[in-house]
Structures are given as structure tokens and as C-alpha cells.
Image (cartoon, rainbow, N blue to C red; front, top):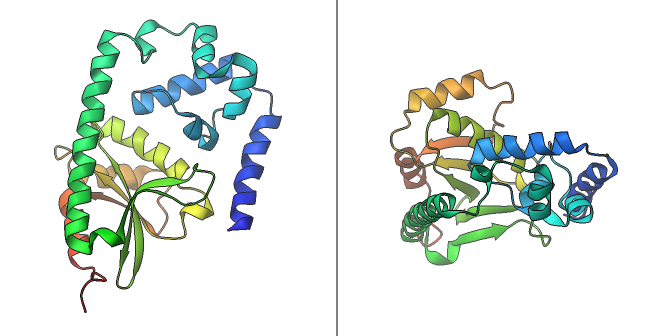
Length: 224
């Protein structure tokens, strides 16, 4: 555990040493926004390979808000504003409902004491997953997301794969659980087949129906 934390700190440290041109930072923020329909949090900035460390932004621009002002991004990019605010509320409400549905299902299947929500892999709170589940023969983590379409799915998956690239988060199998019922399995398989950066053997993308089938084959610790 200590060695893994050391590697994470080393990675972040190397980002701080690099001088980031303002145009490069702007390009990185726009890329993240296009992939996720929002700007990254400080935690996500620190795990994103094409952005500087959050401390660098704090030191040079007085944080992300100051950076946006410096970059003079179009107002439609801001999280402020009525349209953006209403969209954010809608997205957050949907995310809450979807995650609650998954949480309730996991509790019913495995037992509430064996399902951890917002699970952190280390004390620095940079490495988290939506759910971490213990079953009779092992554990697995789950990252829930709702891509609006195939293009958005690609961006979301790439972002999540970057987040889950550290050894500390890959100690256990990871399920990327996409919740858009209109996204066809064949389209997902085509995306995965064409990806240059492939999923690891212990990473899977599942739709909700597939996820339930996967869980049905796992034995709960509550079963004697």
C-alpha cells in the first residue's frame, strides 16, 4: 500500500515539474469538457494525464475559477448560468436515481454490510469507486455512468480508464456499468474492439441487465 501511494505521489510530482503553456491547459480543459459535459474536479485533474496538477492551477490562477477567467472560455462552457445550472440539476438527479437503484439492488443481493458506497482505496481520497462489493469468493468494484450516446460513451470510458490505471485501484476486478438502455451491446463491442488502449483482463463494461446476470452468479456472504 505504501509503495502504491508513493507511485501516485511521484506521478503527481512529475506533473508539477512540467511547465504547462496556457494554450495546452485550455486544450486539456476543453477536451475534458467535451468528454464529460463538465469541467474536472481537483481530484480528477490530478489523475488526468493531459492536465497539470491542481496545486499548479491554484498557484498560478487561484484555482479552476480563476483559470476559466484567464482562459476567457465561452460562457456556455461555464457551470454557472441558468441553462447550464438546469442541465446540471437534471444530470445530478438522474445520477442519484441510477446509483440508488444499483445500491438497492446490491444490498438486496449481497447484504448491506458487504456493499460499500463511495469506497476510497487510499487515505488521500483521490482513488475512489462508486461501489465496492464483498462476496463469498472475492470482491469487485463498480463505476456507474450514463453516456448520452456512443460518442459520449467513448469519452466517458476513456476518462474512467485513466482514473483506474493505477495499481492501487486495480487490486480487484472493475466493472464499468453503463446505464443507458438505448446504447446497444453491439455498438459497445465495436468501440471496445477498435480501442487502441484496451481494457485490462480484470476490467469489464456491462449494461445493467448483464450486470444483474453477473451478480446472480455470485454467492453472498450471508448464504451459509
